[in-house]
Amino acid sequence: MKTEFIKADISKPLDDQLTPAAEILKRGGLVAFPTETVYGLGACALDSDAAKKIYAAKGRPSDNPLIIHISRPEDAEKYCFTNETFYKLSSAFMPGPITVIMPKKPIIPDAVTGGLDTVAVRIPSDKVANKLIELCGFPIAAPSANISGKPSPTDADAVMRDMNGRIDMVIDGGECNIGVESTIVKPISDGVKLLRPGGITVGMLEAVVGKVEIDPVITEKPTDDRKPEAPGMKYRHYAPIAKMTLICGDGKDFFERAAEFINKKISENENTGVLCSDEAAAKIKGKYVVSLGAGNDPAMHAHRLFKALRNFDDMPVDRIYAISDGKDEVELAVYNRMIKAAGYDIISI
Ligand code: TXA
Ligand code: MG
Image (cartoon, rainbow, N blue to C red; front, side, top):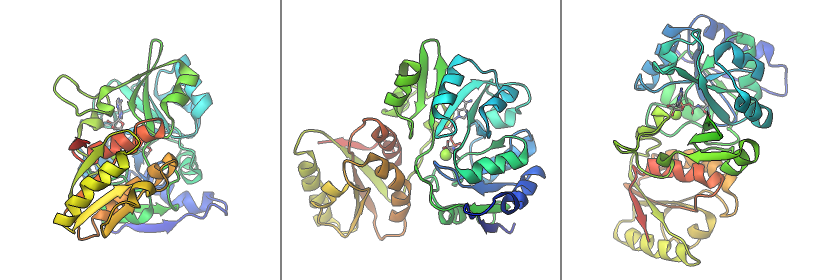
């Protein structure tokens, strides 16, 4: 299949630019498009056959449900049974990087929800994404536009690397602002359960809904008795080709200790990659050090993380060590992606 590549220019009217993409989606095709979190791989969410093509293009297990993307909160009524918590969340955070799990209405096919009786609903704030949904007039089902298991793409080049020849079109809308996937929550009686951390943080959620219960698999490896509520959280994910280990710890001299540990590894094997923030990077003596930005800029860490993980695949490294900067607020999203990228190989020092 030939994959068409178009650039969207948000300084000009988008309707004409995006009409060909909407046409492809209307006839059951696949289009990758930018969102404020990561690029999505879209299909019509009301069409089982179209949704199945997403699973084939990504090599995604069919029990891993898709998020449906709508352009306005009031459209949610058509596809799920909403409640008060949904509207509290939508007035505070939508459009934006949050996904809410709600009981589904029959119009959403089982192929989209992996047979679950709930559906994940999100309203992207990205202008291209929002306009594309509006032009279609139906919700767009979209997972991240990567081959299953790879880091999610945060620019159109990364999408092309994974999806060229597998889908009908890629829309280039530049770099994604946030860089990690949306926060996923499920309303519970007295608040929400957090199923995946993202740009909308625990503190932001608490201020709006009260209680936030954190799914333990966000910070720990899933086991038979500790199964994630978001099916996708059980799979190995985000992994660079070289094996990665995450170094954790705390205290004032943590970066010092981490650097000492890693520098020793580098002296034994110069093809060692290191992923960390600027402060730690200054102490590392290797050739393949990738910084996520200043230690006090967690939003930058999220923004750069997936590109950094993909970068290692282009370097002659056969081993990677990442240094954790903590688990507070946005850093929880970064930590969660890092432990998965490391296949839960974590060393505390
Ligand atoms: O930011 C995002 O959310 C991006 C952009 C494209 O919108 N999308 C994204 O989709 O990250 P994906 O498919 O890569 O991740 C969706 C996650 C998976 O872990 C999936 O298991 C979970 O959402 N999920 C989807 N529907 C669910 C449901 N009904 N109940 C629980 N988890 C669900
Ligand atoms: Mg994904």
